[in-house]
Length: 132
Image 1: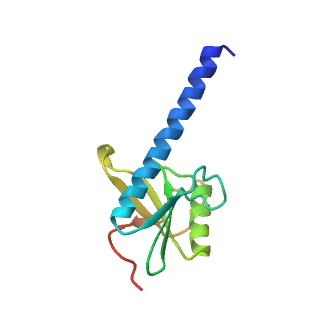
Image 2: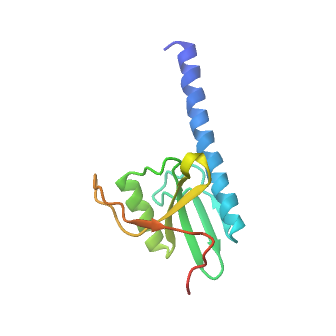
């Protein structure tokens, strides 16, 4: 493979990673404005599938999967949902808002069937506190 092609491939991979990590940092900053403490789980290739962990008292935990486009496969969806259920957390999918502005948060409300069209979710507002 020519050296230039390798360099271009590496550059694209780095830029893709940087866009994702920048978006995760935007999510952290946005959640912090709503009273959350946050931690990024860089390289969230584990079984929990969360890119950002967020929490605030009393006992409100959120697992956030950051997808700029809002597209997530059923396997990854189900892993995030199940991890949140196991840890008594709220599973949330975060995506870039309309016209690239803001962040849209959706709470996952159920499992997805493989290749299924049903995406069980509802809007999630981080400004609202969890009812105890």
